Length: 178
Image (cartoon, rainbow, N blue to C red; front, side, top):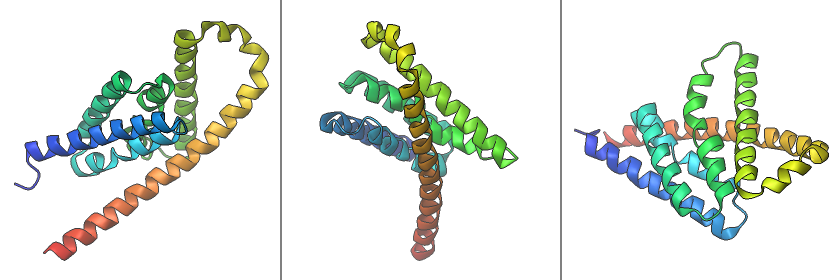
């Protein structure tokens, strides 16, 4: 009775709406191109931990579609939809890879491929003329991608810490409840 279907739908719907609100706030502040999608992706953790990946993917899809329709900054919604949003569910699978070096190589390969796709799509749609100057800015782009990888590693660590913290809090909550 505790984990009914309607309870799952309600939680995922509320968290998806909150994710879209976070993306909108990030677009309104102008500072949240990367921070807002990270926070919105953190909101996938309760559904992922409580109900499993199927529900988290559903919540993510709803937030990504609504974010794409409602968020006025396309780069922000693309970063959420293609890079940071699906990562909590992918992380659960990548954490099972052994050895750990292989898992980190897979994570970083996925991140770099996703970031390249996001920016090629964004540049193709928003500023096709910039694509012609892309080879000239190669060193600056490589430096930005290295900084992005550092940020992604920190994001991965924060995601793992939040999962552990959520499970600890949930265990403590259940223990005090009964």
